Image (cartoon, rainbow, N blue to C red; front, side):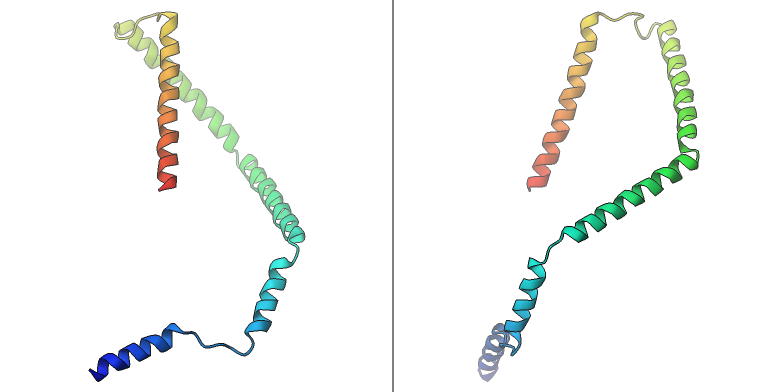
Length: 126
């Protein structure tokens, strides 16, 4: 029984935080820090971000990434075109599609994108 009384007293003592002598001074310093203008910090962060972006872009261009990306794109385009020609010659894919079929493909792609946006919004809210 004494253990229960001691435990309750201990819980009560730890639940109530003691008042510190300099709490008013601390609250004033925190309030002063929050009221200080952030204009210089915002300009500094934005300027450094801009410099970082320029340096990163220069590194990407200087490293030959654009040229390698262009080569890869042209090679994949030729490969895809060759495979489509093979499918048409094999009779798997018709040589010409009715004009309305393209509209259905675009509508289907937009529907899939809309479903993706809806799912991400629902997930963000929960």
